[in-house]
Length: 433
Image (cartoon, rainbow, N blue to C red):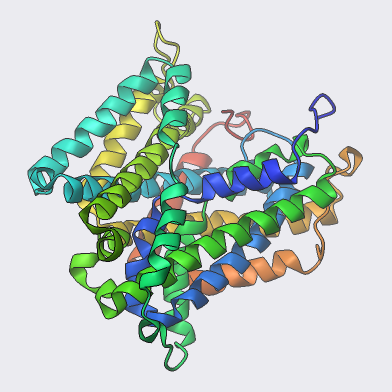
């Protein structure tokens, strides 16, 4: 910890959070939120922004108190022991893997919209298989190559969204934004649960808290700046799409690419094509980044004896976990082929919110036990209240999840618990990356 250089300021940390958070969801979710809430949709964004700030503060303090590899499951393990920490790691892998399938579905839909010949079931399946087979080969051939592909693919995410807002503003019809009665809390919660998918990712950026200058001031300011920026951009996109399309935003034929449908109204087919290209770039960027990192979780769990030993194999020539990468690619492709975006997004939200709930409770316990006090950790403002507010919001959002999503998550928890308790003593306390 003492060897880390604290060189990251407010701007750098805020930019990292902003960049990681914005992905594929904002290109699709405006239609689904409008279908449930209509012109009241911005209220769901505000709920999610508040929840994200509270969760991010908890993760930032937990990360500064437990400067270990492993992220959230290392924090939970330090607070509550190996078994909760292990479950946290499994749930994080599950949520990210389902999210990979959801984003891959958006990628295929965007390609199908741009190139109608690829919109059928068979061409779509071939496209997804080819995409993940290609990404698996790239990552098997070396992490450096996979990292370069990931960096290239993250270009041009935000500019099209800003252009959409600026160019579409003059085409908004105010009557399309008229809000009637306020939505019920249950409807607001259902939309918030789905919309949280668009706010995930900040925990990755906050793992550099040990390299932040004056963390006590920088971290909360960066979180406030980044989440405010993301929230404002998301709400602006929602308002422009709603203001242009009105009730048509919620139509089934609009659901796969609502921003592209809105762009047609003020920029013609060229504008629609640019939005679709931005969707493809953004989703592919997510796919490349997660295919680089997520298979390492399978590899680490296999090394620690929780999964079959072949998953711990390392390629002789390329020195990469080739079997774990290949298996991850197969799992994600199968998920993308068998589920719709909204269904998969909600399924991904449940395990990830459980991880966030664990982090909120963990930071409360870490603070009570004074863990990491000698390292001068970041201490969040309102630290006695924030973890409980964050936990309360998470529980409220989780309460709106349906029975099927809970059964799927519960089945994974049961299988993971069995794997944990069947292992011999003396194993590592948490997987190494």
